[in-house]
Amino acid sequence: MTPPKNKVMSVKEAISQFVFDGDELVIGNYTVGSCAELVYEVIRQERRGLTLYSQSGIFDIEVLVGAGCAEKLVTTYVLRPAGRRGGSAVERALQEGSIQIEDYTNFQYNARLVAGMHGFSYMQVLEGAMATDLFRKRSFLGDDKYRVIKCPYTGKDVLTVPAANPDVCIVHVQRCDKFGNAQYWGALGSVAAAALASKRIIVSCEEIVEHDIIQSSPHLTIIPAYRVNAVCEVPWGAHPTEVLGYYNVDQMMYGLFMTMDGTAAGLKEWMDEWVYGCTTRAKYIDRYVSKFGSKILDAIRCKAYYSAPANYGPAFTSRWDNEGRERAMGLTLAEFERVLKERGKLYD
Amino acid sequence: MTKPYTLQELLVISVAREIHDYENVILGVGLPTTAGAMAKALYAPNATLMMESGIIDFEPLLPLNHIADAHSCRGFSYATDLFSAFTMTYRGFVDVCFLGVGQVDKYGNLNTTCIGDYYKPSIRLPGSGGACDFISYSKRTVLTMLGGTFSEKLDYFTSPGYLDGGSSRDDSGLFPKGSGPSMLLSTKGVFRFDPVTREMYLAQIHPRVTIEDVKKDVPWDLKIAPDLSETPHPTDDEVDFIRCFSPAASAGRQLSMELMIANLMKQNKL
Image 1 (cartoon, each protein chain N blue to C red):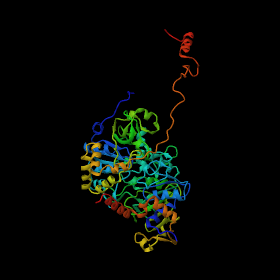
Image 2 (image 1 turned 90 degrees about the vertical axis):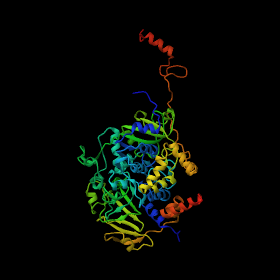
Image 3 (image 1 turned 180 degrees about the horizontal axis):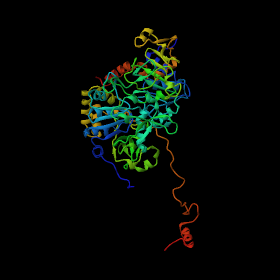
């Protein structure tokens, strides 16, 4: 394996190096803590012809579809900004025929990524869906949306979905080291599977931390460094959605987005200001504060409720005790080497 | 005489009473999470509340924004992933789940995907999310219908209720025996399913609602329970809990939005 490499770069560099026209792109986050800044940069760099995967299909999908980045969508859920009355970017794109959608259940979607993550070619899913239109109505995947096989052990019909291995995953986490060890906690959803199934991984994080922070809390690491291509430090990188331990959802900004998303013109106006109008997240936050003040952001910062430390410490970290004797043999290094010599173990 | 209550409070309470102590409960966002919080606080302290995002055994302190909302509780007991939340359902560990309704037919089959043609919908609804798999494998399912419609024929069949009625769900071999929707709550009443025909009937009716009010929303000849009763009056404890935990749930979406906007205007002196 190559030695650890510093993968820290700007969001602009990361998207330009690792996201291409026509890619299958998966949004790693599920409902919460969306990788908003990475999504906005994909839009600003005008990627086209993407096949988007999103478990929750919320505002991240709305802006990508609204911006014309996507031709195909694999999802389980479509946002409705104002309940039954409010349209959505996905609804508009379906009506004008500019996007094709493949609908799965939450589990089936996740199972496709789990199969991909583990190197399997398909995954068994829950057979009840065979009674529904999810099974019967298919879009661009056609026969390959689902296949039914016979279980070799029970002889029963088993519903399966094909593995998904998207070209690139974009994902936001709480913290990461410069090598790409990404730590995430809270609602785990399908975040790890989305990242690990993908060929390339771009991680944005609230903060970059020293490697020893990662070493002392490996249970929080969901993506190991060797899989990661780029690390971007982006405070407030998921705003207006929330990041556990950092900030709550910004109801005001999310509400504003939902109001504007109901029409194509409204969404464009919102994106002109908040996506195209801000070239970095720092500029986005500056604009936010100059427009709304800092009161709302201050009010949604998380209070501390720390995880109890888990002790990863061993009894000792050297075979030699405090007196310089080997713990089992009881010899000093000099005594030990004398024995090796006496027994004829040493070669000149 | 007990405390006066709102219709929204009555709905939450009707759902909460479906949760029993020691049950494993999958909560969907909105009314069910408030009902779950109330059940846990008042009558099911040992219930395990779960969400498909992998947040397991939590005690909500605030109304939840969505099903991955770890910000609404102070920690929780088990952090797992979505995949495992569904396989635990498949294996039979979930007693009851709660689903919202877009369209529903007389056998409790659901559409939450679209109105009109699937490929060019006039309205694109959210989709399955967790619904199809949860109603398939949860031991029972409670349906909550706040804005949905009753329909003879679904525009899209998202989630399986009792299929064609009778024993067809059990006969299909796709689902655990005896599983399926146990009740449907609407803003007008509580519906249950006949144990033999599996057809939905009106079991309880909310105050100030007539049978004709209910029937006019239903395109088939809705059967009415011979012992039709009025939905029971909430207790003071129940009303107090909701008003304290989620004042917006007591007021309902429209009124709470109105009050919120008025406050925003006042705060910003607009």
